[in-house]
Length: 543
Ligand code: SIN
Image 1 (cartoon, rainbow, N blue to C red):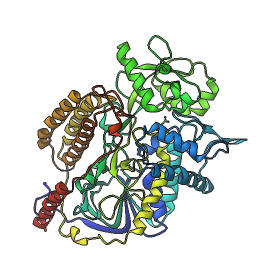
Image 2: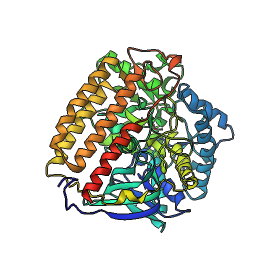
Image 3: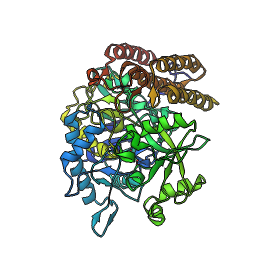
Image 4: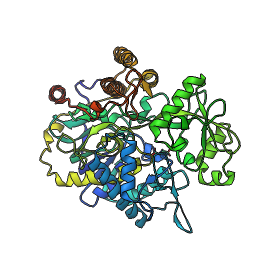
């Protein structure tokens, strides 16, 4: 059945004060905090356990050591970000981050500690040990589990899993909630005074990724379609060390291992990162990923090695249990063998443009966590600042929503909304084929090292996928359209920035150019209004 077909079921309606879309750390934190002020609906297209936050290993950076100071953390964040960070956002992150982390500990979150106090790890770009971790290198999982347990007990939060948003209810000026499909593809209208996007990143748009396959930037596409400004899309961070094997399957090998002394070796067994930075393996991520990609190019092999053979094996097994076990399952004992690694797409710095209270240019629409682009990370995120971002800006987005009086709430959007998105048999397979084709293009031409020529070619190749979408319908068609839209935004923004800065490396513009010391966004207001008119017409027709 198509969305326009008469007789399609009318969606049921659910109203709450806060609609939170996405259940990673930012969404869970925002839901819990918002529940102190009103009713909350928490939506996720998968399950609450499946998020990028869940897989975060290293930890959460915070100034909790007396030898550290906010100033050092701010300075490290700004240096990693290559001068493009929004200083105010960085100050908020660092100062409020400490408060949020202490609050979490007071509420019972257990970070790893020994008899002397909290154990603090070191990661690339940090001049001090300030990375709190939990469950060894399962910090994301432990934090997410801690918050899920609190969400489950909270009567003000209604949770909907397997519920994918297909559209934000917006006229390009204000937002009144979202239209979603439940687990049997039944339409549901979630109406709310404030809508908070916490949908995570987009790194699964690249063939080699550390993210779950659901990280396809849907939140960015939904907001873009609703008329929200999108910024900094050229900045996609590649993690230097994801496990490499010929089958392409990959998993993250935390930077904290390099903090504990692991070395990167070339195919001929040399340490090579010092050629690029005096900080060696503990240089910021953009430098290490770049060094690895040059080494890969030079050697003709697809990977370099991470060497931990000189480190204490029982310490490695207890502190990095999940990584030890994952490597072992892939046939490598990291305590006595070299581990093949190569960079993989890891974190989307760009996204929905927000102010410091999570506010977007659409009234009633807020964003926090990886989907948001506050400018806090500049051109390259400092390691372990992302979980911190989730709790700091998760709270702030709710505070921003509280300050908003719901003036934009327009219940007329719900009148007559009617969709049916049941996919036809076989569509999932074809959807996956098209998605893989797009991720291969992104990895090859919009990856770590880019060129104008490659980006233009990528644009054409992505465009050539569009006509094939005619073979899809309903939900999978929409998902694939959104994937192509976000791939297109990353490609277009990358083409526009004619310099190399942080994670954005152009071989045709290899230097940082002071005239590019600015960020930019793409406000699609007119496009959004035209689209809204189309949606409104369609809704009226179905009434
Ligand atoms: C890691 O553990 O290396 C990843 C942490 C992060 O992305 O900040």
